[in-house]
Image (cartoon, rainbow, N blue to C red; front, side, top):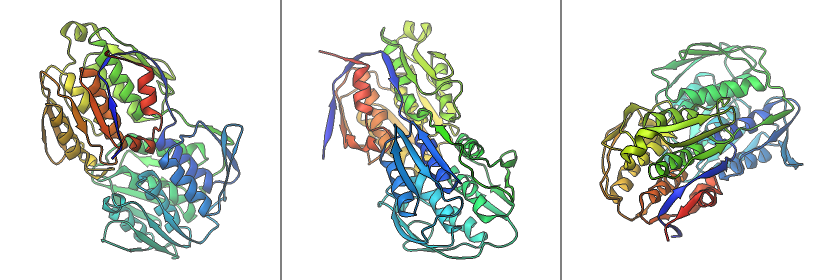
Length: 438
């Protein structure tokens, strides 16, 4: 297995320009494909997951070209023109779930599959909701999981459907983005507590930019009007990835404990539509000093944290920032006491079981890690150990655990190429802001 050895990092300081947001990139590509007109997408993320979506759009008859640094998508002005296709969608949840909904309502014959882990990630709640609208969907393997076979079917007249909200917010987002294809007013009711609400906000914001305004009753129900129709905004810019910002902001705070920092990220800030910018608030509660502009955030250690040489321990609910919260689990290694992350059950159904994986790898570094169905407790060790970190084909595991090198130990990252899913240049960006021990 390929690996990357990270030498102990003495300090981190500098500026990182973030790659485009994966969540925004794939939403924009899908809606551009369904919209009337030509959309010029600027600062699109170049990664494995966006390539999956681009390949799918091509297979579905959508013209995509590069022009003067922009990705130009000529939309179908409705359902996809190709009515029969077999799509392999890797482990890209931001492609698989929305395409399932859009294709189920496109009147074609489609087979959707992915890598082995995608076939372990639940999709039954989305399928049940689509069947409630009249869609014809068969499971090709285990019930409730991909791969799927979608067949032509008539959408029923009344447009009310419900979907569970406590497994993945991607199910609701997928339904919302697909509903304009029905031509009917549709109300989606959310069953149970909706998790990861900021990601639904991204969906609503992106739909608005393509001309579709969704009426909402809090987080309980969402209504897409009968005249909803996607229209190209012409030019659209993808903001930097807020989840990726978390690694560099944490590096600034940790390095600041011993005189390093600050680290600034460019591409997200006060004006961001991504919920993961609230990671900065969580880091601030740990004792970091945070400065922020409309399109940048900067972090170092605050005065009290510098004096103590430790970040503050925490016990908090991180349901609103599930991806960025992983970074806090590693930042806990530098805290002054036990740290508990709560309401993170969605980690179990991500690229890997992230609660179990986090606990396993934190223990290798010498920490005590206890886990429950939706929580993780990390007790930092007084002396970090050098360790070989397994990444489970999960990009965020690789990026999170690179921060352990700030603890004065060598960290071996197995399968470092897994970061290509969202941030192919991550380790180069980390090296540019790092000063390594001799």
